[in-house]
Image 1: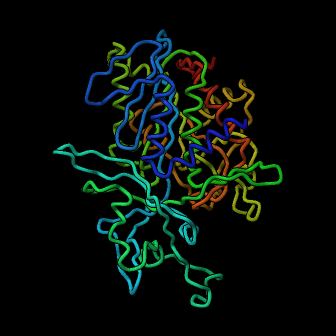
Image 2: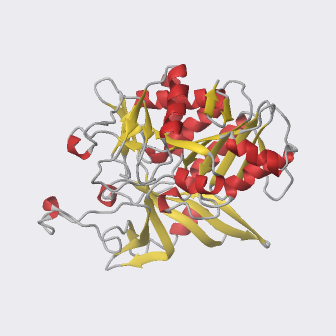
Image 3: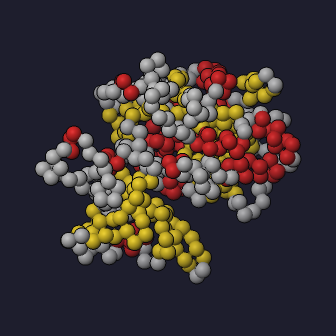
Length: 426
């Protein structure tokens, strides 16, 4: 357990943005013998091979197992988290200071971003003799969003509505010191454009009397990203193609070329089939025999606000893997897919629990819905229970991460045989 939590902590610490998380995943895969593929070239695949392909900040890794029963076992998670995105020409000068003009990315708990050590991080795009390329960067300096003193905002403790245009501007420098901010961040080569974010720079830490909790920025959803990679690397041999899809833009709807609602995952699955010499008919048969896990976190019962949880499905910290369901289709789980997941987890000795929103609360959605409307694969939404979702710093029970990794490893190591009456799990 200690080693897995250490690896997760390092992943969280080094993944300041989706671009950093993708790069961390890429380096991990290369170190473990995976081959990089390109969408602009043919896929050359062999049975027993390990591969990955990238598009923007998204990355899809897969292993090719036995092909007697060709199907896909897919675990999908997202690499992005709520943050403050810099606009073009972001420097705004006030009386004697310079601040940065930003806009919200995703639905953050924005008051939690005040008075913290923040960094500028993301990617910059440069031109080298006509070759346009991107670099992942992070600032060597910190910025912060200062809150307004209680003496100047007497009602702050009775309720404070954050205005994104006026309240969330990070303090960059005293007047005159802002001119070199981009050079310090990205070097002297001219930057043509950028996708830069203001992110929490605090390091992960454990807490609790037995250090049983882990707090960190971006737990949603980098715990799922790291867990799916751990499982893909640690799985037993099994039939079919095991896929870890790390997708961007979930926090803003997944509707992009590299998001789950785009064609990236579908195209990669098709190209895998073609490279392995399967025709369209075999591809569609494979989809009908495949299974998809959308892995994203769920709200744990809050110790100070238990009334916010469903009265008969209390999702607990330390309670194991969460299986998420919703009558309105916010999650893809149904009775059959839930039973399949429970069977896999029970065979592996992994604890699990159910999550439902309160019936009078609006539910968020996940990338499973976006992806499966294109693919038509059976699937379920799972994750781990956490607190403070979308805050600048979130937390969860460390033991649940171990259960999640063990559950995903068991999923990849299982074989699913579909027939007209359902699935057999082996």
